[in-house]
Length: 490
Image 1 (tube, rainbow, N blue to C red):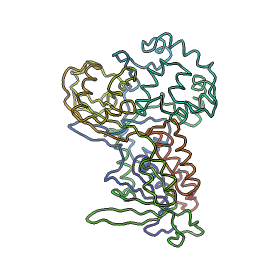
Image 2 (image 1 turned 60 degrees about the vertical axis):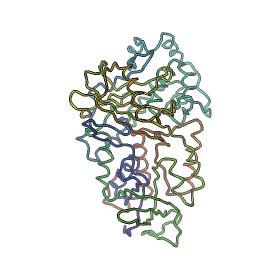
Image 3 (image 1 turned 180 degrees about the vertical axis):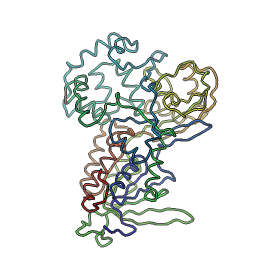
Image 4 (image 1 turned 30 degrees about the horizontal axis):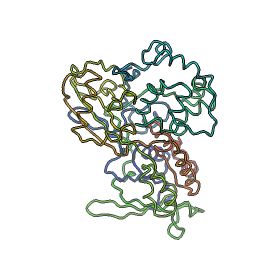
């Protein structure tokens, strides 16, 4: 198939992990693809920076190998030799209760022995298999769901801190069906979370997937930013950085004719954007497929007509603000052994932080010899105003909490602060209306797709899985294997 310089089979808006992964799989299949990114660098918030010999993460700190797609993408990025796994410490996770941190029990014997939950809470768990499921159409918050099925103490000291660690969210506001669809499905399909967890293992094995509590966690020797950087190197000129004022509209038949017979005019998209070097350059390209991976609040401005009016509602997707505070200490300054992933803070403890990761315990090459690195998260939906405190206040707030919880004796060697006013999309009660909107727009405007973290999950693993599915869908629609016999098949 022949193309002119401004014709593409797929154009992807956004060079975060979703956009780069989708593009890498399409490119490997022989699809002519271009990624447009407004920032001067790829990866979105997934970046790693070396500061004063500490390796800090400005976004995600790790990902879980719950699906074979993770290994596939790492191979596409040629990063197999750079993968770093925890040495076993990552399996221990702590929860704060009454000023002390206790390991979260990961086995039935540990659960029976743990002081984290009372005898009454443990006894209450035995009722779970006998509680009737809610009607399928019921929309329930995570808090209401957990309280109904396993009790208030598990909500306070397991689910509440977990939700803060994943979403920086409030379980009373998040929809269980939208934010944790697998949890909702366990109740609907098996009538019980415990029965569903046991029976679901066979189904996951058939899909070659792993439960999150059994999947290996990984990063890279030079941090999570190594993955988008490597994908960018693979794609090279197929990623256009610094692309501003992007506008997308259906192309008129008279404007453009794809280099293929019998192409449907309403399935061609016209994309314009600006780039700058010494002067501003206006660009115009055309594509059969357009994949939106940009944040919800940016999407309406991408369209001047076509689906513009419909997509204006995406401005209402709520994002939690988060401040990320990386802190380095001399090892002897910290009394706690730091023998795990880190600790999470339940809202009931009335603290000023959401939790802290122990980066240098998890992965090598994070801190200089004799030093430790930890990352603390502040704000979220629980205390959004705290994320906006100035640097001096944030430093003091974090240090006061770490000194009290971990027994830190003196000032840190190093601190680094990064703020995000719109960090993590919240799958609140009513979020289904956004998912229905996206589904409707995709049906109404063939060739327009969404692969985003406000649809299908917010984790890096969720984004990679969604990117793989999107690439496969586009390849199938393009019938690439028939048109390009030498193309690599997924």
